[in-house]
Amino acid sequence: MRVIAHRGASGLAPENTLAAFRLALELGAKAVEFDVHQAADKELVVIHDEDLRRTAGRSEHIRDLSWQELCRFDVGSWFDPRFSGERVPRLDEVLDLVGGKAEVHLELKHGSRRYPGVEARLVGLLRRRRALKNCVLSSFEHKALSAVRELEPKARLGYLLGETRLEAAWAEMKELRAESLNLSRQQVDAGRVAAAHRRRLKVLVYTVDDAAEARRLKKLGVDGIFSDLPRLLEDAS
View 1: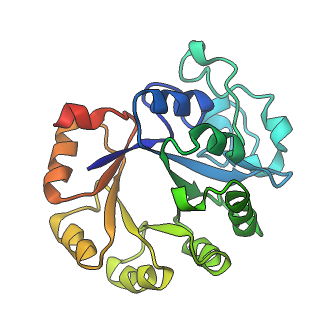
View 2 (view 1 turned 180 degrees about the vertical axis):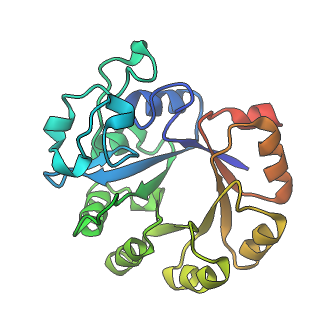
View 3 (view 1 turned 180 degrees about the horizontal axis):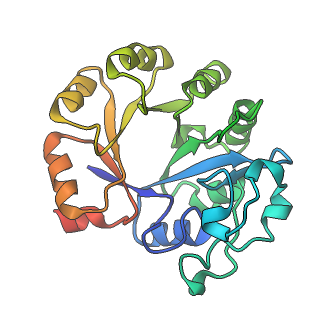
């Protein structure tokens, strides 16, 4: 069972920052996960929330600021003063850092409103960086996954179930040619794992930071977990 570093080593460093991704790699992570929004200047940036309240104490929304404007804000100090000065990174910076060192799991965010044309910009950037083969794209906005699939037949897709009924989701996953079913800890059970495996889908579960829970999921046959602690599996063995 693979451990995917959720927002980098976000239990040990401020989430979705270059510091968190560097630390995840230093700890031996073979896969990292992060979230992508679009800034006002169409730059793709790595941050989970659609605004800066939680990580920078600001009310501004990502979609209303250019990346240069976002750079003015410290998104590290909220976690620990040692990380003062960490800023919201661009997607290309994170891809350059991770390089071929770890598999990338990228969740495309939309916030309260969709970002028109963001799928084409994302696919274009991944092509330019030659990162398509190493990147698994997911989104709760399944229309975004359909748009990505139309743009890039070779894209690797992960299906976040969200509020969709699983019975209805199987057909959508088949149409999308998804490679994984991504479930919350509350959604996973042995039956769903078996059903996914029969359909040749991996099962990835979020967010797992407890060693006992990791052991339980491993026994269920789960293929991977998203964790804030990249070395959790060593504690669960």
